Image (cartoon, rainbow, N blue to C red; front, side, top):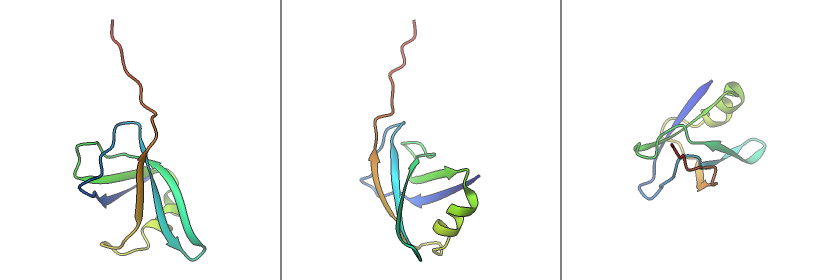
Length: 85
């Protein structure tokens, strides 16, 4: 597993259960992949975690720290209301 942390834009707000789409340029062209947030809505950064460590590390970790990737979102409504009785 590997986690990747990104600077969170000030206007980026999300709810638990939503996801983001990571977009980056590779030798094969523009690639986009959705990821669930592994950071909490109150954190001052965005973090994703994946089991596909090697593939994503080659693509995402390629840019030096401070490099740029595009993050689109948040999206999705995979949220539910809990009721306790």
